[in-house]
Amino acid sequence: MSSYEARFKVWRGDEQGGDLRDFAVEVNEGEVVLDIVHRIQATQAPDLAVRWNCKAGKCGSCSAEINGRPRLMCMTRMSVFDPAETVTITPLRAFPVVRDLVTDVGFNYQKAREVPAFVPPAGLGPGEYRMFQEDVDRSQEFRKCIECFLCQDTCHVVRDHEENKRAFAGPRFLMRVAELDMHPLDEAAETGLDRGRAAQDEHGLGYCNITKCCTEVCPEGIKITDNALIPLKERAVDRKYDPLVWLGSKIGRRTP
Image 1: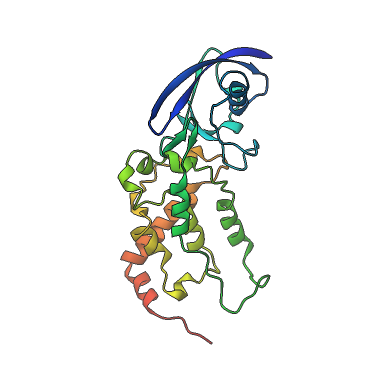
Image 2: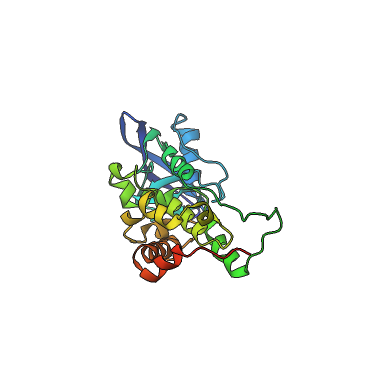
């Protein structure tokens, strides 16, 4: 089928409220949902608000919910839908609506600022860091994040409980804490910062019940739950309850 007319329902409105509007749009072979949204803008609703940038799945701007599932519009091919079905596009549910498909994701930038930065080793300059390749590879997985915030949107702790947002950083930023906590060159502990304790006490690690919904929607295929959140939970519990780990934390390092 080279082209056909598809039925769409697109949410229109603002912070005061809105509803789904019906559109009949031509779909051509090889197109993605973002193509259709642009066609709706060009032919039927020029004031339709949508956020996008690269159209290559690398900027994370065009996040939305398509048939109820958080996705990138530029990476969701129309071929995955039955031509007879109605495709529904709505804004990310976890964040306040600005207008139409655009949401205010400022919550995520606030949480990013709350995560203390990498603490470099004392006495080492740029280009002097040395790490095992396996440590580089482990950290590199998390650095693939494009900050589309689909994981934040689908996490029910954020999505269904507005009151949790103050105390819970969400999977994207707990993953950042985990990355720094396992980084062999991070010397946060030397400054008195226990990243595991901070994850538990300040970033709400205990709220996460590892349902893996964040991993399921990640467009970069990052194993957020298995490789970041679960190991971080294990280390946090060890530091708090394992007597040998606790004792080891009280013994200072010998300095040459």
